[in-house]
Amino acid sequence: MKRYNEQRLSELLTQFRQSPTIKRRLNEANLRLNWETLMGRTFANYTKVQSIKNGILYLEVDSAPMKHEIQFNKKAILKKLNEAFGEEYLSDISI
Image 1 (spheres, rainbow, N blue to C red):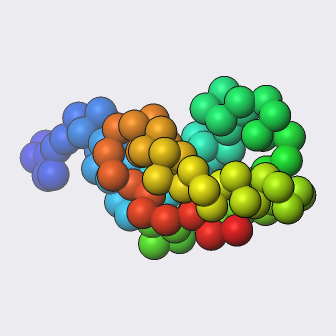
Image 2 (cartoon, one colour; image 1 turned 180 degrees about the horizontal axis):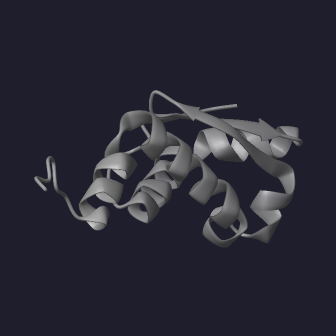
């Protein structure tokens, strides 16, 4: 019996995870799960991750002072989140 397209399961899973749609959804899910750990409890209490599209993180923010804080520290926040992703994944934050 001949076998065609023989690949290891680990190779297939790696290819699957690298597809743009799957990668975006996995990153978004990972960010949601680790949001409080990455950003701190106070920050997480006033913010909620809505989605990630085209490298832009969309946040829902409950407090005007927190919105100002995010705008003021946007570069530092992006740097911290990109370090968690291990790549330059996010380019902007939209509130």
